[in-house]
Image (cartoon, rainbow, N blue to C red; front, side, top):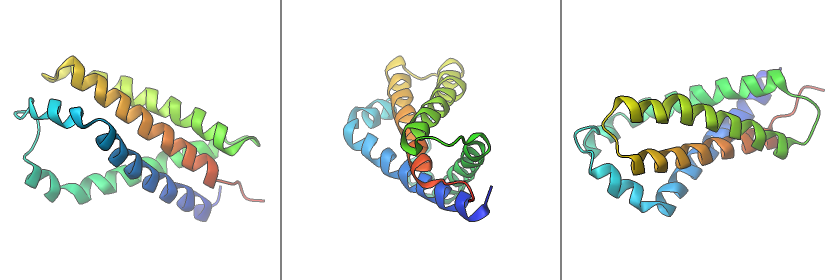
Length: 139
């Protein structure tokens, strides 16, 4: 593994994560409508924004970790296709370990849980695609 290659792929994956996230909110405006029904569970928008740097740093750290896992398991292959498969697996992990877990433990509606599951699955699949396109093992 090479730190520069990991950084490039993780940086691209992070940009892809936030771009996909914004796209999902644009394509699924009903997700925000549904989330507003759960006001007791979510911080006020101003409070969320004040904590945004923490979330962004945490997402970057998660994507660095996922990029290292990708690099450790990399086989010579098709970057985009391998990245999409990898990202889809990460997306499934996030959905089952995080989204469904929160649905069980928090008072979330089934519709919000399903929209979050779709959004996170797509975001992590896009992250995997970006990592697959950008990561190249050292020569």
